[in-house]
Length: 619
Ligand code: ACO
Ligand code: LMR
Picture 1 (spheres, rainbow, N blue to C red):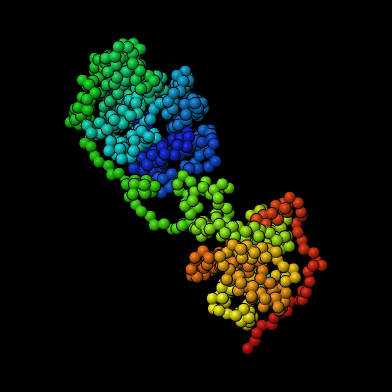
Picture 2 (cartoon, protein in one colour):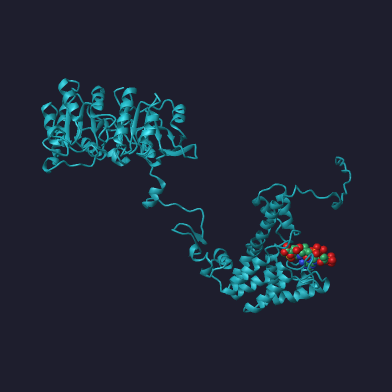
């Protein structure tokens, strides 16, 4: 095959280098390839079996394999291997990849592979007839067909430098940076590249200028070649010999960079590992002279290189060797959403609004207070404060946050017999996980059990706001057949008072500036307990009326309080507190490892009668 890559070339990419692969797929898209050029990724530690990429506007999945063998087995059509392993693993990865005959071209990007190992790779590759590009390279490109990872730069730059369509020049360099620079010059002075390879800056590149230029000699798309050599090594002499012997017949422009080396006293090491002249013939200026002598077109200096490219291009154009340049439509590459947002080019309507916390900065905050400033005891914030920040976006005075915390502690548990704890225990014994068992407990919280707090606040507040006499209120509720939320208890009574209620009331009377609604509720309790001594103001009722008093004392408007009640805020205090107890019951069951619960027959009244058979209605 004379061209290194075609528009059907498929690559296996070793390492999940998402950005580089996306650049390849973007390139594929603007070149009009039918299929993405990367058909598989090898990433041993990945937990995913695929990676998503954009191919134009649509998304495609590229499979991820744990080993090169798996990738090769699954993607036998892939003949190119892009080794993006670090210099520590690049040798092993390449040697393993060489074992698979389907991989014809292997590119190694890592810089710093020990020279001995690089030589071993080269010997093995030569023996097996494979092409190695690199190490220490950005790779190679066949414009309009395939490019390796980052070569050519951004898509904008690629289009500007005509790397998206086939041109007439074969370019060979060592350096990736200068490759892009030369591609730019060639796009201005000629019609762009037919093929380009940066062989890499190490002393022992896996393929030489000559390997690529001999191939380019056979590639009909390449009409003339540009060789950008550099100080150090003797590879340019191979080109000189090939030119002299007639193996290379197409026009060649050659230049070795590093001519400045001759002005230094001793040997100079340039950027690349191989870029130093150990002997005179490795000097850039000497190589330039020798190239010239062999009939290679060598400019006077680097600045004259563009003119020379232009001259040869126009000559070949005039001769008809090169066809007149045509333009190629480039499909619009959609801009990435994040990039466009960051550049302020687009705006997006939000679907959610959050006014309580923000996790976008270095640290998440609760209503503007960073977690680190409230989590530890020495910050002075307690659980009541955290709830106040996240539920009400307020920092309440200490008596309020202490009250909130006291409520939570007060309702944390009331033994295993109550509805929620029982449900949680039964679920745990049925083998359900903690969260499911917890949910089953929480689901019992409602108008009769723990969830009467909002109702209590609503009805007592309504009665007081409307100046209803307590007797009138009780009678009114009875008339409407509504049990007063917050009144009544299964086991607590006037003779067996609920200590929790007494303590909450004691705290409120001592620390609340006023507790008007509590006082009203106590008067209602006198009426109901006169009827039946279990009709006490229960723990839900006490919390409900005291929360209203709490907000009033903190300056909340009646509308604000009504809204809090409507949204179920007060029952949430019971949910939070009792969750602690439910979890305790679930953990207790898990520890005890009790068997599946089955209710006893003698605890159920069975009253099952034979089903009545309904006769069809006849008119
Ligand atoms: N308001 C007015 N009358 C009531 C109320 C009430 N809240 N609760 C019970 N009564 C009356 C009943 O109408 C009945 O009257 P009757 O004897 O004239 O027929 C009598 O008291 C007994 O009623 P029961 O339903 O048998 O009472 P029980 O002890 O079973 O009910 C319960 C307890 C469920 C808590 C009940 O009082 C009630 O529904 N209260 C309102 C909801 C409530 O506050 N729940 C929270 C309880 S605390 C907690 O769960 C943490
Ligand atoms: C509770 O806190 O769960 C109770 O007041 C209900 C009960 O019956 O004990």
